[in-house]
Image 1 (cartoon, rainbow, N blue to C red):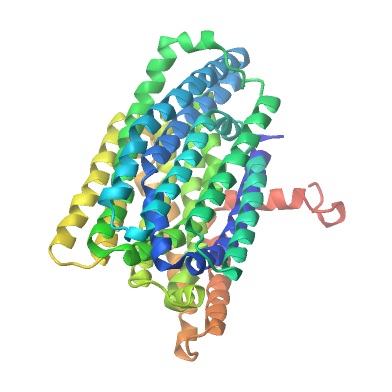
Image 2: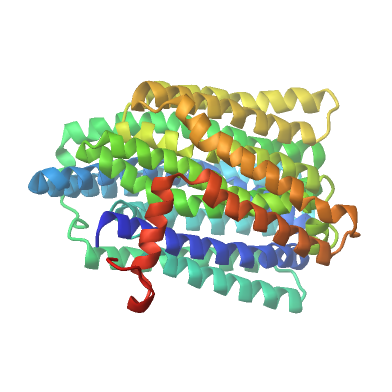
Length: 519
């Protein structure tokens, strides 16, 4: 299979998975809130957030090792034997690290988390024991996920992303079924639901590990490869700076949740969790495209084709932004009505926090390609230092606002402001380290997407002039906005090369009698 076809297959698979997860998530989020109640739903979010100190290590190490995998795959295009051997070395080193690190994290982090549940968080006394079990189950999920990173990362580097979507479809479907059962059978579900989510995470990870060993010859651990000081030094240097940036993200994301819990209590935590859920659903659409492009960008860098690397990175930002807006645009026009229809009795501040989290998402997706290109080049020390320091500022900034009497919107506003700063940081470093022009990004990504969004938003708001708030107005607004937005994407946002690329791929899959001559 050619690289272009694999990118298309991965994009189609992950996009389909994301749309499916989005639709299911709209129901499952509401059912989880109904089954658990606002208090337990908020506690599930804040207690689960305590394991972010493990989860972010998982993401950080996974991204680091995936970069070296994909770079080795790109090297194999021009130097096959050397590239294959390098990939095997990186796998053995990854297995060693991803076994030792989670063990150390559990030893240090587990007692700290239990202390926070028992002594520090604002938790009703009768729910403390249940929250302890929630924390234990989430720790197990995170531990297994970290140990399995070398195998999952190989799927990504080899661009076998489509196969991973099968597991996602299965787990999403099973989770929706269980949540429907919870809603139809009221009871105390907090601990039982935490156990279910643990099993839903662990079982697919085991299957992925076994499959990777069967289909990838690189997935064979060799202790002798772990003795390479050069590889350890490269990985530790790269991952160390990634760690600093990840710590900043952790302080911003989970620190803000803890701040909200201490100042506003579990009910407002529930509003933050709902806003984060909406943000996550919208992000699944853009991450579907970005996830398909990321290994290809790094592979092209490893192969030495930086022109194609920059072109793929720019398209990654453009497609990620447009796919996010495809979901966010009609939602923003009808957010209050959608939240009411979805949750019936949404927690306080939910709508305002959703708008702020949308801003956060758009700032991040608009420059995702730039961040991927910088990482592919490997020169990330100053870049991660800048990202990490600005992330760390989000928490004290939010604390100053809250301590001076501001409501929770000031917290969400602090998060959105830091994301706007990050957008500027990525643009500057991408120009300096990867040769990506800020001017081209503005004229090829921001301007055309902005024009399409403004036009579709203006037309999509027209039903508000003659229809009362209802599910029918939500439907009409969505149809009208998308009917304007989609043609503008094709005619204004996509350039001639991108339109030709899409048409060629579509025609190649049509039956013979429908193809144009010569296709």
